[in-house]
Image (cartoon, rainbow, N blue to C red; front, side):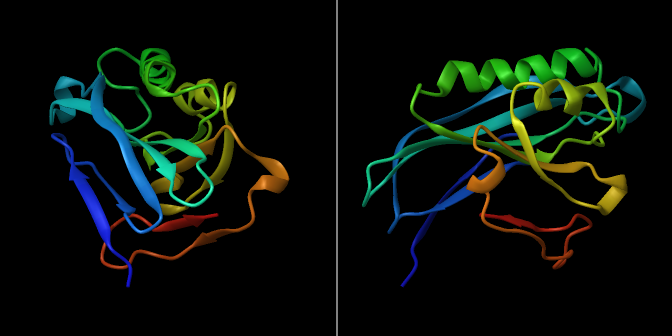
Amino acid sequence: DRVYSSFLGSKAVCVAYRTDKWELLDNGEDEVAMDMRTEFYGHRVAQWVRLQHITNGMTMLFVNHHGPLPVGTGGKCGRHATAWNLLKTIAAHAEESDGIVLVGDFNADAGTLTVKEVESRMHRVYTGTSFGGVDHVFSNCGGARVISRKNLGGGGSDHDALDVV
């Protein structure tokens, strides 16, 4: 049987992982942006977990992000600051040998400076289609290391579930 553990973040994000496959090394969240007054829900975070694979010992940093509003703006501090704060979170919590995965509803499509700035440092391995493509998966591993990419549809959400292996 699959057994999961999860962490509910403080700002509408969560992460779950399989405890039969992964051991938790550390977890937390960093504030990376804030909504503009016109659509204000507050601060936005990058929630992260560092995990070690039980069988092979490999480690990874997994980061989940829900981007600032209005869509495409980068929020109060702008697109560039949001991207750099995400990359700063990764730099602060990743180890040199970690596989790194950054996912989320960025509230920014692939053409925005936020996404382009992250993409200049990481591989954008998949982008969804809902809301013009605001859901993204980035990794420090790209190309042939990505085995499959699939859009699983909404499944009860207004965003698509993205499956990347």
